[in-house]
Length: 203
Image 1 (tube, one colour):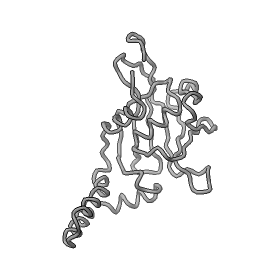
Image 2 (cartoon, one colour):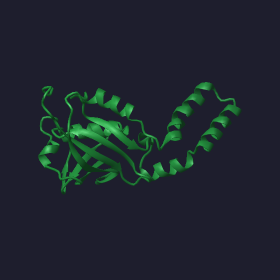
Image 3 (cartoon, rainbow, N blue to C red):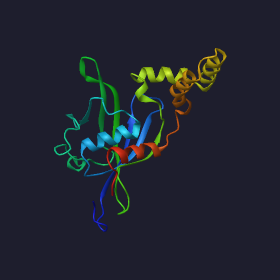
Image 4 (cartoon, helix red, strand yellow):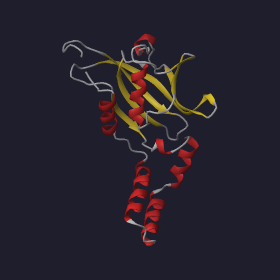
C-alpha cells in the first residue's frame, strides 16, 4: 500500500492485437514497478483471454516469460523511452515454439503520476471486443467476423425457431453468437472487474 501522500509512477501503455483489422487494442495504466508477470495478467484481463496459454515478452531482442512474481523483472528496470515498443506473444503453433499464434504490440505512451486514491492496474480505453478465446487464430477471427453479421445471426435464430428446436438449444446458440453482434465496441468495466479479481487493483 502506498502512503497517502506519496506519488506513484504510472506507465500508460497501448496494447494492440496485431493481424486484426481494424486493430483490436487497449489502453492500460500500470504501476511502473509492476512485474512482467503482472503485466501479463493485466493484458489477459484487458482482452478477455483465458489464463492457460503459453506466453512470452520480446523486449530488445530478448525473450522473457512472466516467471515467478518474486523474480520477474519490473517495467522500471527496462527504463523504456516514450514511444518504445515491445511484443507480447500468446499461444504458439504446435511444434513450433518460436511462432506465435497471437501477437500484441505494447507501446509506452507516457509516464504519469498517480493520484493517491487511484487504483492500478486499470484499463481505460479500447476498441474491438471479439470473442478471441472462441477462435484459433487471426485468420479464423477475420473469417467469422465476416460470416457472423447481424443479418446472419437473426436468420440463424429464426431458422432454429422454425425448426421447433428446444429452447435450451436456442439459448446455447444465442450465447455463442451474441458476442459477434457488438465486435467494435469495448466496455472497460468487465476488464477492470477481472483486474480486481485476478490482481487486486490497488493504489
